[in-house]
Structure formats: C-alpha cells, structure tokens
Length: 319
Length: 196
Image 1 (cartoon, rainbow over the protein chains, first blue to last red):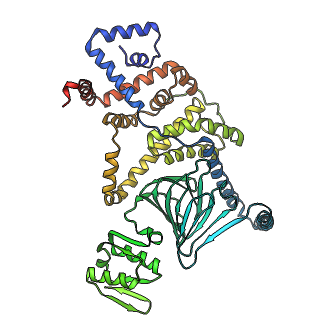
Image 2: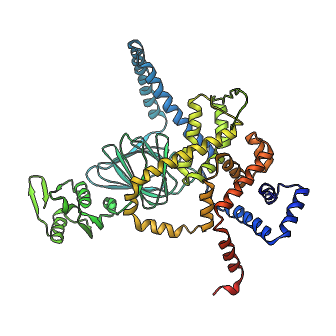
Image 3: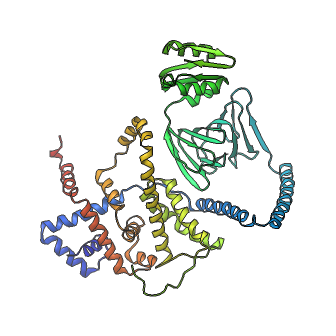
C-alpha cells in the first residue's frame, strides 16, 4: 500500500476502484488500521492550526500602491540629479509645483474641509473628538484633523497624547506621526514623539503601525519605540505605567529604577534633575506620588534611599 | 528541478489595472500562507507585499517556471523563511528583553493552550520542502481538490497526489514518537471509566 494512495483515499480523491483496494487493506490488519488512523489524526488536527481573520485585499492593494509611488518619486530624484541643466529644470519644476500646491491648498481650505487644531501649551489638556474618541494631550502637544473627522478619522500629532478611540469598524482611526502611520479601530493607547523618535504604548485593543511599508501589530501592554531615520519596528513589553502620569496625575512606580522616574519627573516638572552616582540610578522604587510638588517627591526619594538632594542653579543633583 | 527548454520568458504585466487584479485575487491566500509560516498578521502581509514589490521593481520580468500562482506561492514561502532566519539571529540579541518581561510571557504561555500535537504539526509543516508545503497548504487550508491545485500550479494531478502523499508521510515520520501516546490519551478521554 502506498502512502500516496492512502492519502488520496483520506482526501476523498480516490475513485471507486482505488477506494476498494484501500478499504480492503485497512480491514485486513489492525496495524494497517492504526497506520491509516495516524494519517487521519494528522490531517484532522492540522486543520485546527489557527488562521485568524486576515486583512482585506483591497486595503492591502492601496498600501502597495502607496509604497510603489513613494519609491518611484525617490528614484526620479536620484536619476536626474547628475547634470546641472537637469537640476535647474528640477528647480523650476519644484517652484511651479510649489506654487500650484500653495494655490490649491488655500483654495481647498477656503472652499472645502477646514482643518481643526487642538493644542496644549503649559499644561495637559483633554477633549472629546467629533467621533466620540477621547484625547488627552500632554503639554506642548497638538493634533490637527479635517472638519469632516467623523467620516475621515485621520489626524496628525506633534508631541505626546493618549487616545481612547471610539469603536467604528467602517472608519479606521489613523494617526500620522513622524513618517509613521498608526491605525486602530477602537482601543486606547499612548503616543509620544521626542526628537523625531516615536513611542507607542497600547493600553487596550490592537494598534497597527506602518512605517515605509513595514508593519507591526501591538496589543495590550506592548510598547514600540521607533528611532528617527530607522525603519526597524520591534516591540517590547511595557514595564510600568509611568507614561500615564499626565493623564492620571499619578506617578506609579512599581519596582521602577530611579533613573526612569527622574526622566519622567524632568519631563513633567520641566526640571533638570541629575543622578550623579550611577549606582543610585538603578535603585528600585515602589510607590505612587499624587500630583505633589516636586520638592515633596524629592524629599520622599531622599528619605527612602538615604541620598542627598543638592541644588546648584537650575540643576538638582542626587547623590 | 530541470527544464529542458530555454524558457520562454513570461512577463507579468505591471500595468496598474492588471497588477492590481493579480494582487487582489491572490492576496488573501498568500497572506494566509505566509501567516502559517511567520505567525504574525502584519508580518505576513509584509511578506506578500515584498513579493509583489519585487515583481513590480523588475517590471514583471521574473523567472516563472510553471505558473504565475506557483511562482507567487514559491516566492512567499522563501520570503517568509528568510524573514524567520533573520529573526532568529535578531532574537539572540533580544533575549535580554524577553528575560526582563518574564512574568508577561509566562502568562501568555498559559493562555496559549494549543494542543501539543497541533504545535508539533505546525513545526513539522515548516520543515516540508517548498512545493510540498504549498500543495499541502492549498489542499488543507484552501480546501482545493487535486485537480484544482494541478491547474493552478501548472502541474499534473499525479504530481499533486505524490506530493500530498509525501507531505503526510513526512509529517507522520516527524510525529512518530508522538502519535501512539496521543491515541492512548484519546481513548482515555473517550472512556469515562478511566477518568477520576
């Protein structure tokens, strides 16, 4: 009995004649039956290897087109840059294009959708977006979106914000940030940009991030850090909830190393705290500070670890 | 594999309309295929995107040996395996990250209560040769008949039969130590007297 024939029988590909041969063989011996049952078990179990709901082909095609367009424009520049004359030609073309673009921009903003800007200055600020999603901006941050936001849930972000996105499968929620595209359906997560670097932390649900044709999916508790000018997307697990401070008004330390808390304190209080001795920096702290003056937090740290806090000008030194 | 003739080159049209049609008709299946290898939805999409991107870059001039479908599956297979190879090297560097997040991974492991056999099959599948794997994929997950697979891949129905036999045979050999135990367990659960 060949395996090919047995498998054909198992998959109901065998004709009557072959079927009879296989059935005779199987009933002839218990060993044969067991042999066949092994195949059956493998075949049946293999079906259960999970294939989840997968992306839509039309959407994937749009992403593909975007990628080809991007690279086509890059190529065009590279090819033509060789001679001086063509450089001039490019310059002229760029000026003309720029002129048209500016004109279109003003016409568009004049006659069609207007863009809405929501920004924070000295303090964090929270608001509800037209689609019911909630956003909390950290200070010195801003988002911008079109006035028809409920139909076109796209926005641009500068700085740092926490989003709690209203569920709407038909209109995906997209954020443009530092050349990256973050897409969600309904979920909550934090995005922070600093010096061109981007950090995404997911609190609930699933978030997709795309950069230059590369993709990654983040789920609850996962954190993605993307360095400016790098296309590498790799995630880690969020070790703490400190990032949440500007929304919760709490600094939650759970076995958090001191240097990390100091980093966040410097951001929150716009202070300049420096750890002089590296060994202090790794001391783990487990406590929660509630929106207290910096002085008070520092004195708790000082007492807990028995370290001194010294001021020189604007700098606070821990040793 | 050997090819007698100097191949008549097939060129895939990269005109937007035709290429878009090719992309959208094959995307879902290729995506599912890549997913069974890389196990991550976005990465799987990236694999498929990369394959089409390479075809587009070469303006459709690619070495199609049997059929366009076979070429696409073959390319997705190799793209995915290359990715995994790359990941393995990278994961050596990332092991410290994993160690620091041990509690979370422990949690995830207990949630992922996939049957042992399923895991072994999954693993064994990844060791099948390319053509064998592709044919298994089409038969098992796309639920195509031998004839349909033969048509799509430009192969004879006999080849499909051989390859499917080979696939199951390889799986059986790789799972050999595992199968009898599992069957015993199965009987245990079927027989309530053995349960306490």
